Length: 246
Length: 321
Image 1 (cartoon, rainbow over the protein chains, first blue to last red):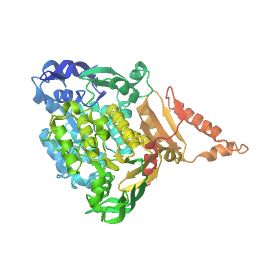
Image 2: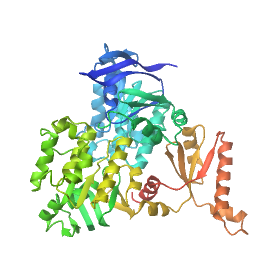
Image 3: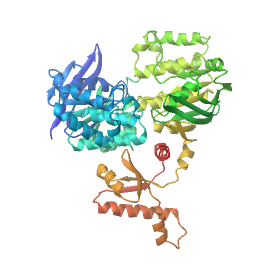
Image 4: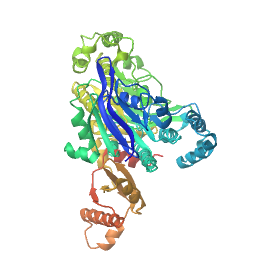
């Protein structure tokens, strides 16, 4: 199997505080990899390093074949990123947002129009292409944000709590979209606080106090922790965290 | 303790709230449950006298939100969704500030916030802006409580908070309830509904239903089945092609489905029976299993289950498009 992410003893220290403490794992091509952890466990710091936005204190990682320490610019070109907090420019139209991201990611000029058309058709947004993004319902925004994040055909997309606050039906439609994307070979690295969504991942890692406390398929994790669901697995691992105040 | 009658509010073209009516009883934990954009924050702002409704009347602790707004402000505690403390003041300074604004002292009401505040007291000289998310949340709650309010308004206190910290937070709310405080809390997490005495489900500015979580689940009149098999993704696609299946959604490790009214076929074949519901469900389950086996699914498990609040929300929201 082709490895899209390879992480070895990755560490980030802020002074004496080790936000991420020697984590190692691999993510395979086409996998949906769930990256869970309590607030303050080090998820965001780890994700920032993997996206080439923060230099590790020690250890190494390859993302899409590039070294996060020496080739961060190549990583940024070859990944997609979407978060719940910020994804699209509210004061630009749907079409303008797509055009903007296409430009940022240097999508070939002649590709932009056909890809845009395809995207709008798939989302049923043809009639909204000249609407300001702020006028769209949240569910549509999230789906558009995801489509924009993979518009330049990255090998891997990082999703940081993509479904926070989204209604139950839209949340599920969003995951169906993720499934479709992985069918075309893209790798998905996702964080969430919804434990039912952890079940939709091929494998799940759970960070506690800067370390990876568990990593396996949801089925195996439930077996290992003798739990009925992922919520129980998470609870068992995270309740003893010493960084609880975070 | 809180009463809303026919509250409506419009922002330019957007109808944020339409004809909202409900009551919160003294000492209750009342949950306002719905996704972003449902109108939860607008309702909180009206009840805490920060904005005016276009239509309708509302009262808090017997006081009218328009005429008695000054008195209401003295009596309620409000924790907005966005962290709104002074980032440049320390933990301790923030708490003192809020106590002073309400003409009281930290010492006078310390008992009420002790359990919560003690967890952040070791960091009392740290600036609020430098706290972690969980600590900010505890400080904000302490500040909202320091004047001993009769009613506490908590707007999405657990959004973006991990499941373990969320459980802890709800533990704190239960303690506050025992001290006689009425709590109106909003959340987008449907699983928190069961921790409230009563809830209102809200979407697109309309209330879908108001009741205790148990009674709302009882109100789910359709048969709900959970279905799992080895290939869950394919199962979802296949279930949706079965004509009898009305709705099908992924729910963690199983899919939840409701069926179209198909009792007729069972009744045709069992016209003599007294329409025993259990037999009927067994019949449906077997039928479904056969259909899925024909589509080569392995390890099929089908069970009748009790609906959760999320099932109810999805069912009720279908009629609110």
